[in-house]
Amino acid sequence: MGEAPAFQVDHLENGHSHGVGVKSETNNTEISVDIGDRTFVIGGNHERNTFSIGVRIHDKNSNNWFSPIVLGTGPKPSKGYSASVLKQGRILVIKRGSPCNDSIWFLEVDSPYVREQKKLLKKEVVAWSKGVRGNAEKPIVISGPSGVGKGTLISMLMKEFPSMFGFSVSHTTRSPRSMERDGVHYHFADKKVMEKEIKDGRFLEFASVHGNLYGTSIEAVEVVTDSGKRCILDIDVQGARSVRASALDAAFIFVCPPSMKELEDRLRARGTETEEQIQKRLRNAEAEIKEGKSSGIFGLMLYNDNLEECYKKLKKLLGLDGVSLVNGVEIEGINLPTEHTVSKMEDKIIVQETGKETRNKIVLDLSSLNGGAPGRTRGILVDTIKF
Ligand SMILES: Nc1nc2c(ncn2[C@@H]2O[C@H](COP(=O)(O)OP(=O)(O)O)[C@@H](O)[C@H]2O)c(=O)[nH]1
Ligand SMILES: Nc1ncnc2c1ncn2[C@@H]1O[C@H](COP(=O)(O)OP(=O)(O)O)[C@@H](O)[C@H]1O
Image 1 (cartoon, helix red, strand yellow):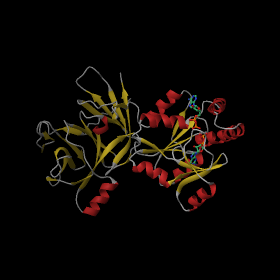
Image 2 (tube, rainbow, N blue to C red):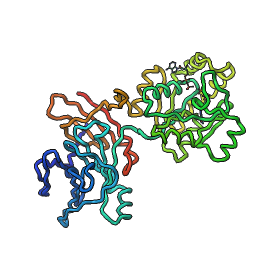
Image 3 (tube, protein in one colour):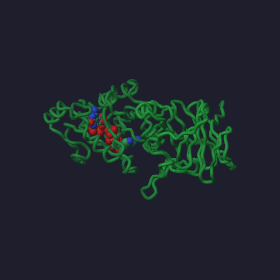
């Protein structure tokens, strides 16, 4: 691996950097980042906001210092920082010694959002966003043939992370199964009423599946998002296609069975359908699997052979691996070490612990970042390399 050390920053514990006179007191560490003819000094206290660290800019041409307008909620002061300049006018700022869910921040200095705000405010502007592992806030669309285990996987996720996920309760014209409750598993609807509501524009998507009408009402998704939870939609491939074309930015997961024989066995063992319904579901399954694999709708694929293994992979896809619950509080499994060096290799940031025997490396994969200031920057994938 051709690792290019890319330290573009200087720790200012000694109070100077490139001749720029910046004082830094103990426990009030600052870090400077050079971009073009400007130096951004990040850290210390914010002039007007004691809860967020400060940002100052030094213009090398005029030798002037100025304080920009800082938008968004920034990180609270920490023991120290590491930083690296990224593409799209962003600086990655790592808080040293903080848990992973609070350690990764982005300071946007020349992103489209910041440029727009500069024009509006006619002032120098920078903006913070907090880095979020995985695609934490996006709704999740799960599709796959009948009997593959979608419902089972979703139940496992909701049971383990009850405060994190909420299920989008669809409408359907099919009859309830003995264990199903109206308003919990589905809103069991009359066909004429549902068709009228679809006409009235109350549905995000709908489709005819196995001879019945199914649909996701806009309200079903809003109920979940309003409660601050991440929404899970269990819908068929046609529905996924409609969601993909809609304004809803979602993660799309397709679940495949290990074989058609196993799918048939699971459907029979579930014992919720008549023989005729099973046959219809199996006929539809072949086309669904083909479309799921080839349509380009689904960026994420899961094979549900061994249930526990598949569930683990699902959690990994959602950036939940290593998250364990202690008294209901989510604890991230990977903490960035207090003492570390940072290097950059294309879209990957490598954080290596220093001063210890252990040579663990943590890799932050930033290749699929999305979102940004003044909210959250999502899509960070975190992995560890032991050697
Ligand atoms: N398009 C769409 N499909 C849905 C919706 N709700 C459920 N489905 C899909 O309808 C199909 C049949 O669901 P269901 O009758 O619960 O049977 P099961 O998949 O065998 O458990 C599955 O593929 C579901 O993903 C919805 O709101 N919209
Ligand atoms: N990996 C697996 N191995 C064996 N049985 C499974 C597995 N995943 C799910 N099942 C079982 O298969 C049946 C169908 O699963 P279900 O979650 O209802 O599928 P879906 O919601 O995709 O229609 C259920 O009885 C479930 O317990």
